[in-house]
Amino acid sequence: MTERLLADAAGPAWEHGSVTANRRTLVDGWLSPLRARRQRGEGAAGHGAIAGMTWVTAGAMAANGLTYVLYLVAGRLLMPAGYGMFASLVTAQVVLAVPALALQAVIARQIAQRGTGQRGTAQAGTMPGRALTYRTAAVVTVLAAVATPLLAALLDTPVPAAAAAMAMAPMLVLLAGEQGTLQGHERFPALGVVLGAAGVGKVLPAAVVLLAGAGATAALAAGTAGTAAAVVLARAVVARDGPARNGRPASDAGADGVENASPTVGATASVLRASQVQLVLMLLTSIDLMVARVVLSETDAGVYAMGSVATKAAFWLPAAVGVVLYPRMARPEHSLRAVRVTLAVLAGLGAAVVACAAAAAPLVPVLVGEQYRPVVGLVWLFALVGAAFAVLQGALLSAIARDATRLAVLAWAGLAVEGAALAAASSVTRMAVTAAACALGTTAAVTVAVLLSLRPPEGAARTVSRSGSARWAARAGRRRVGRTGPS
Image 1 (cartoon, one colour):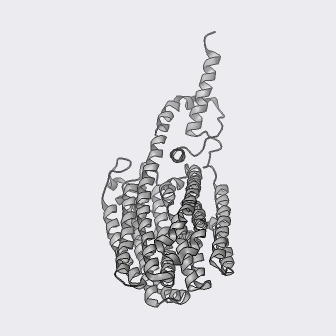
Image 2 (image 1 turned 30 degrees about the vertical axis):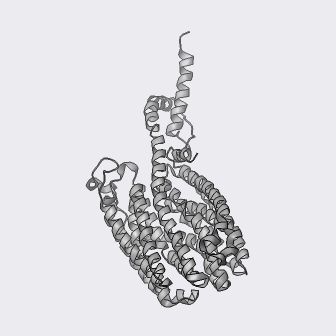
Image 3 (image 1 turned 180 degrees about the vertical axis):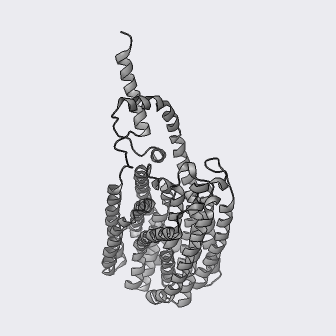
């Protein structure tokens, strides 16, 4: 079923229209064999999407799986109070790094919108993307420095621990620049390798430090050093030159290549617009953990943080769907179908993840200790929050792909409501129920708004799509043969 949906996503975006002249009917009839031959490539595009999703999923699952291992190691070695601090700092680290996600989306969108027949290799679009990456990293570095003492005061953590967490943010920006280049050129095998390597670089050094007896501060610093090594590897992967998608060498990309991309101001504005979308998404997926650190006791906050691991799993596991279909969402002729397929697949995968979380919940005390037994009955609810936000992420990614970021105002409104509601929660159970209700409501509102905002490309109502015109012309040809045949 998923393969069929992905094949449909690769096909024409519009199936309906009208033909108003016999001349157009004749032309459609003459061209229908050519169009039919072109349409036979739709299945291949669908298989390509599945292959790309497989690579990205493998890399993302490797990275996320290692992250969950780190959470388990930290939860067992640091105990609830120390783990609560560690988890809240990691969450804040991700929130400050939202410009990295926005940068990746903007670079990928600029490359994708050049058109399939006009893109060269990833190396062709490297230089302007690198300049934008460096500017974004510089801004994030300043923000991290300013946010460090504020974050330490807000979360009641030592300043060195907050500084070690914030040092990761510019590294994530540098990594995102390389990932956006690979994503835009649909080099998904290479992207999967980079994602996996980034997970190893972030998690392995931190886990080793924790197992050696060090605390949260040293583990966060080790993760930053490992991510810096992953950036170097990603740069090498992008620099590897493969065959151009259209058969031309990268040096011939000319005016259609990314080397002649939009001016600095326009690119920076795009990153800022996408940043506010990614920011509200990250805040929505993190606000409950931050509020729990303030509202609940240290022990209850640690228990809630362990339950939020299921939220993170349900949120990030299906991320490959949006990554692979994002370039198609960025192209007007495929946008509507790609968005619908993305949302449908994410909803289906989310339901499966919630069911698996409910079945696996009894294993929590076995894996991390009896002190986390109170969360067993709530694991499915935490997973439901993550699954809802995975659908929300797909909807907001489509808004970034079409540069329709004003739709994020609904998500910001949902964030305000959720923050007020969570502040009134007084227990782990009430906070989990409140987070689930707010997640479902915000996701429903944004998804409906995104679907209503999608419109046919200009002229789509007046013309027939490739597949639609071919079928109409074939039927019209059969009718003409019936009327003019031998008497």
